[in-house]
Image 1 (cartoon, one colour):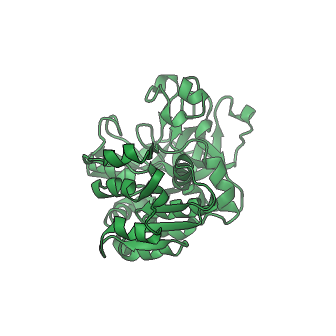
Image 2: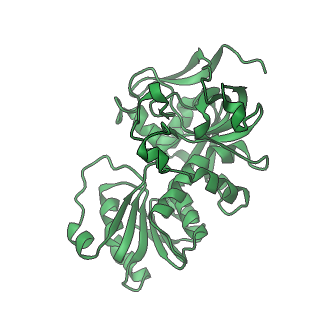
Length: 354
C-alpha cells in the first residue's frame, strides 16, 4: 500500500483552539504497527482535554492530536510485530493504554495503572491523552493496545470496543453476581453499556437514573428508569428494592450529587464503582461507608476486557451500534464536536470517518 507523507488530523493548539490540518504520517517503531483509522468516536474525556481541564497532563503540551476510541486496519508492520502474528490488512480495535510491561502493576495484569506511566522513552503510551491519538487518518500504535476484530464486526462497532470494555471493567470491578440489583447513574453511552454488561454478567434488575430522552432510550435496554427531576432519587431507588438498597451502583455521571447518591442507594455490604472522573470536591457519607462496610471501586479505563467484550459484541450480547447517533467525516470535526458537547439532536456517540 502506498502510504502518503502527510495526513489529515485534528490538531489541538490550545484550550478550545483546534483545526483540521495536514501533519506528517507517523512511522511505527519496534512492537508498533501503522494503522489506517477507519472509524473513531468522540469521548467525554475528549471534551475535558479540549476545554483545557487536564492540560499539562493530557496533553503535556501543544500542538496535540487526541482520540482514543477507534478501529482500523494494519498498513505497515513495525519490527517484531510479524512474530506476534500481525499481518498487513488485519482489522483491529484500539485502546488507550500501553503499559511498560515490566513493573509490578503490568506483570500482574493491571497495566492501566502502570508505575512507569508517561515514560515514553521506555515504552509507555496513552494514546489520545499524551500520545498521538486517533483523530487522524493514521496512527502508529503498540500492538499491546490492539485487539483483532472479526470480519463480521463493522469498524464503527470496533470504535466502541474501548468504551464498552470500560463498562465491562466497571461491573467486574463492582463484582456483579447472578440475581443482583444494580443502579446505574447517567444514561449516556457509558451508562447504556454498563446496563448491558450488568445483565450479561447475571444482574436480575438494573435501575437507570437520569432524565429526558437519554433516560427513555437507556430504559429500552431492560432497565427501570428513575427520573432525578421527578423526586428524591435515593428514596425512589430504595422503594424499587423494597427498602433494602441495590447490591451495586455504578456512577457514570460523576457529579457531586451522583457520587454521594451512588453510596446512599446501596445495601449494607454493598459496592460502588466510579467510572467517571469528578471535577469538583465531593463530601462522601463516611458514616454509612464505615458502618455499612461499603466497598468503593475506582475504575480507570480497562484492563484485559477488550478481548472479552469483542465476542460479546460479535454475538449480539452487547449492542454498541444503537448508541451511535451521528456520523461525520473527520474534516467536519468542529461541527461533530459541537453536536457531541451540546447533545444536539439527542447525541450520544458521535463517530468520525477519517
